[in-house]
Amino acid sequence: MPVNKKYFLIRIVAWLHLWLGLISGLVIFIVSITGAIFVFQKEISEVTRKQTLFIHRHDTSYALPLQALLHRAQCAIGMQKHISYVTVYTDSSRAWEFMAFAPGDPKGIFFPKTIQYYESVFVNPFTGEVTGKINYLHDFFVIVKNIHWSLFLNTRYGQPIVGWCTIIFIVILITGIILWFPPKWKRSEIKRAFMISWKSRWKRLNYDLHNVLVFYVFLVALLLALTGSLFAFNWMRNLFAYQGKHQSKPKNSLHFHIRAEDGFIPDQVLYTVRHKFPHATRFLLQLPADNCSPIIIIVYHQKEVYYDASVFAFNQQTGELLFHESFPYKTVGEKILQMNYDIHVGAIGGIMGKCVAFLGSMICASLPITGLFIWIGKRKKKIKSLTSK
Image 1 (cartoon, rainbow, N blue to C red):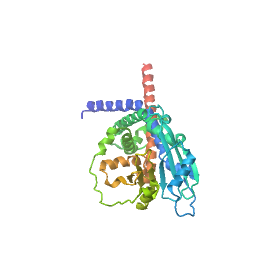
Image 2: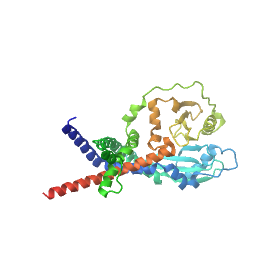
Image 3: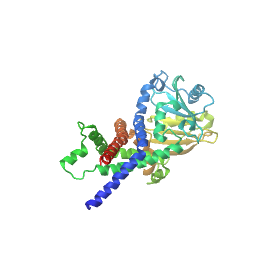
Image 4: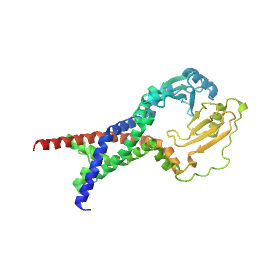
């Protein structure tokens, strides 16, 4: 490629990198720093709320009936707040969570206005003792998550802003790696591209932190941005939804014998599904909101992730199995979508994956700041040169 044409293309790439960075920099910083904070929310919450989330194992071998526990939880949270979800742990050291959730004003500008109530009561399943309550509207990590998700705005207003800034960030990453690429693979150029000069003056150090780190974080940042943008846009999710073929399910692999005359249907559903999946780590039971909705139970087969799950829907009146789907039988595209959250927060790779996601997010948060300082420095230099003439 002729030198002048190459120079012209680099100038275009540099112009895009600069102005897209200035346009989206603040949002990228906010989304990145909140993402880094949220990565270890589970581990931190389990330490700070140990008395609420964990129990001392009781001598009783079996948990109390779900109906009795649900009544205790409902009394504790208030009869005017309908408990919608129950999280049941197979770990006998965990309290069960009974969550009440109701949407608020769909047109509210800020996140809290869009929710009427969002609270949980935690109950010792062996004694029925209430171990604690959490109002998630005031929970630190829920606030952080919703800043990350939609800048603490209503999802319909805030998420498109976050989504498009994330798409812009992908372009910034690509233009950044083009600008990073050494023009000549000499020893001095290679050293400048791959190593940070920690002993240099602030201006050079800032440049290295911006220019060199983009290489080391590129793939992680690109993955975080792509998985993040999948949350924001239906058209992106639709690209994956129907890719691949469904795996055929083995016939007659599941039999459920639930009868309405045997008592409280949710109790029977939980007991039967737990019996079918003794090695599952937890179960999420969604109670019907009206007389027509089914009882839904989600079986999570692994401890730290959400993607490996089986979903069952039962008739709330008769206990008849209406619907069943499992992760292994989905299309490739559906599997990617179901794994998206676990990839995004790094949980797919265990604690090491979370550490990578944390470091990647922190570096992503630093790039708009170091980039801004580079731009300010160049502006000052330009103004100084103009005034000196």
